[in-house]
Amino acid sequence: MALLTRLFQESSMATPATTEHYQGMPQLDPAFMPNLIFWFVVTMVVLYLIIDRVAIPRISGTIEDRHEVISNDLEAAADLKLQAEAAEAAYHQALADARGEAQRIAAETKAAIQSELAAATEVAEAEIAAQTAESEARIVAIREGATQSVEAVASDTAAALVAALLPGDADDAAAGAAVSSLMKG
Image (tube, rainbow, N blue to C red):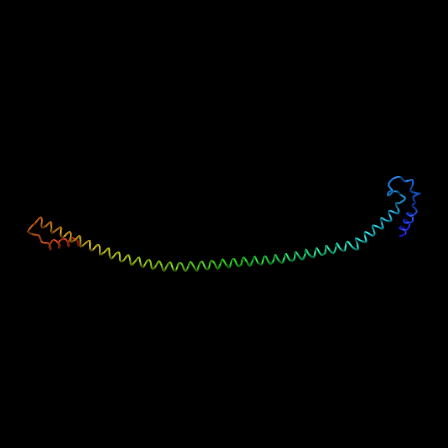
């Protein structure tokens, strides 16, 4: 404090008479230096007090608020991430369940189609067997009819030959018996 008082007194002693010999910028006149230094120190102390008491608390409060907002946002983001992961897990589980259900339905449908196909195959096989038996019976009837027709033609031909070669000895019954015995034997 004594230094400030001394500086103030020295600055008040500086008069224009003592500064007449200095030619140049008045701010750099050595006679005014103690006064300039005093006001510089006063200004710096006032600025320091304003910054220390007003600006720094406001800036600190703003920084703390910002940190609080950031930490809240990070916590909310973490919660949302957990919710998203849970939703994704639920989605994958639902997808797996749906696939399992689809495979079960496909297996049931395949089994139903196989049973219907087996029943239709059995019906078709039964119809084919019936048609085959019917066709075989017709073939047997056609063979018997053909055999009888051949036998009749052969009998008639044999009788006609015998009548042509031996006109007096022609016996149709004997010719038919001879043809029958040859065809059976």
